Image 1 (cartoon, rainbow, N blue to C red):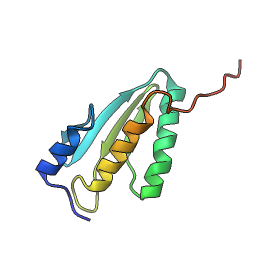
Image 2: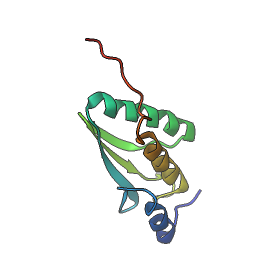
Image 3: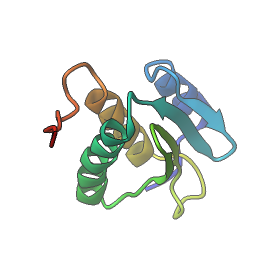
Image 4: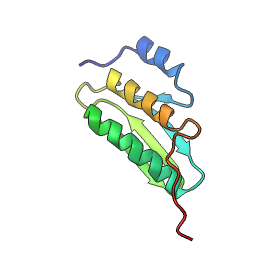
Length: 104
């Protein structure tokens, strides 16, 4: 697997709302309604990342998830990064985040 060209990356980013290029990575910050929704997103994305054997660099602070995707093997953005970003966008579409059960 090789890194995508700048042209290929820019073309893909046109279809990924909110994603930006940052050096040899693509990045996005997601804002959720609460911690549970943020963790639901991360858990769903983690299963897909594991299936791809391609794992994000990410950070969670309460309802915010910061994501950085890059391919350590190629030193740049690869097709795996784009696939994972697209899956993350699919997850955050309305009603795709798993609802949680209130324990009140």
